[in-house]
Length: 472
Picture 1 (spheres, rainbow, N blue to C red):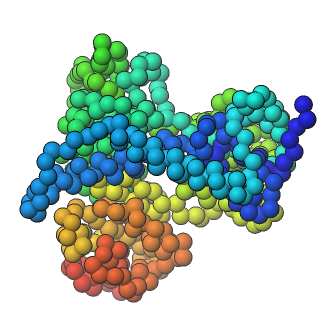
Picture 2: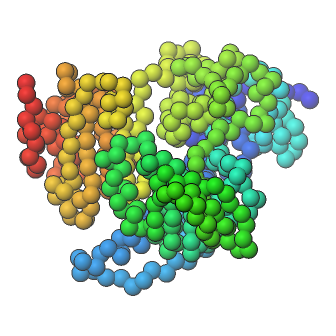
Picture 3: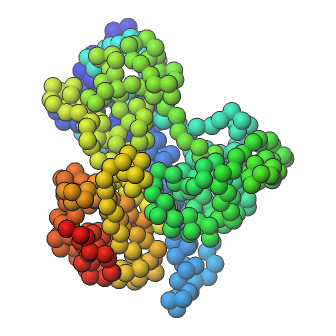
């Protein structure tokens, strides 16, 4: 069979993969995009970022209506039509995936649907519905993403034990739901199901949830979740699971006791693993880390000179926007340009209620690494905008180099923190000082002012809060 010749083949059409394919096509490259699923967009669009945020937004309305009575506005109990909720969510995914397919067509990117398998360093076999096709390429970019981790002890082959993928289908509202894992996935989906009416118990092996964030930022999230969930158990371990009729029997070690409990469904949210199996990469020179991620350098190059890798499959922060940036770098290097993944600020957002976001250095990291720093905080209880929608549980904090006043990191918890963190990310990328932010006029009344006032608090002259003046 005569192979298809191309300059670049991209394996995986998620936010990293299609970004790489589109950018390369914009630069004049002949590109083939290979995707095994029928719908483009990868995990993020289909079973990750987009559907989870759609469900979070929908269920947040339930919470808002319940909390509006003290304003003199009351609503009747909500009625949830799961079929219509799923249909609405699916309509969003279809529109976005259709948009990606349209852009691929307009850019001249050939989309080949099927499973890709590397025969050697420059040959990819694709199993399509029409049969096998072979692609000979100059360069390949592996962007196959990640999968939800499912430890063997939890893998009962029972659909009542879910990963995030199944949980996002919202087949039913389980009366009792156990969430295993207090990372962002467990906290976000626990929030969704609690709002829909499930009695949620969350167990986390560590001594706190959302361990990547500073404790003062995660605290408001935990406090609100404790009201929404039945219980949050820290330093707790699930020892075993077993099918018990239409329920799951779970044995949990907590507070020195073994608890045996029944749940209608269990969500396992203990992390994600790289999707590198059955790709044929053993037929190339690509090397892996001890955790199964593809090894790459700052140019996104693997140990095979013809193959690059980006996104979740290379590890680090498993975030769509990181994959998008890595896609740009890989394509630019392939195109002969000077580009590398170095000193790039990657913001993180947890879409809980309230939202939690940070970028750059956290306070905990600064302490652990012995980096000189000062912290400036502005509580949202002093924000007129936060008061106007009764969400004063927020906090904006800056991590500042005391010698240069350069901002090293920013953390925000509160309503809409995910939208606010972009300004902080830009500030860090531009090497801004706290004074730069303090002197920038922010519109009033907005939550963006909390960044300005946190910077003003660093110098001791924030208008709406008392702060200690710095000794010069």
